[in-house]
Length: 88
Image 1 (cartoon, rainbow, N blue to C red):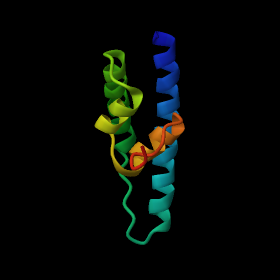
Image 2 (cartoon, helix red, strand yellow; image 1 turned 60 degrees about the horizontal axis):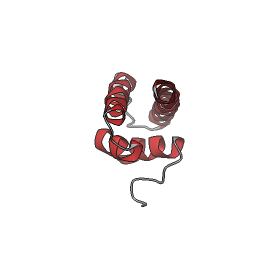
Image 3 (tube, one colour; image 1 turned 135 degrees about the vertical axis):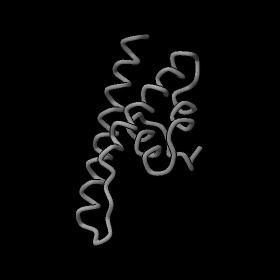
């Protein structure tokens, strides 16, 4: 199980980093764009919290929905092959 969680962690970290890069690029193109340079660190902490929930018996989808919201949640769910938060 530890190997599966580590592989899942790598997948989620990669997805969060790509989401963060896209936000940074989007903010550069926008006249009023704002980029939070601390966001990625916050995402990584929440990924660890989601993985702790999974290790304690929560489903992957439930853990991600509990720890994330909006576009980031949908991006992470898509990365692990789950439907978006608005789909069932």
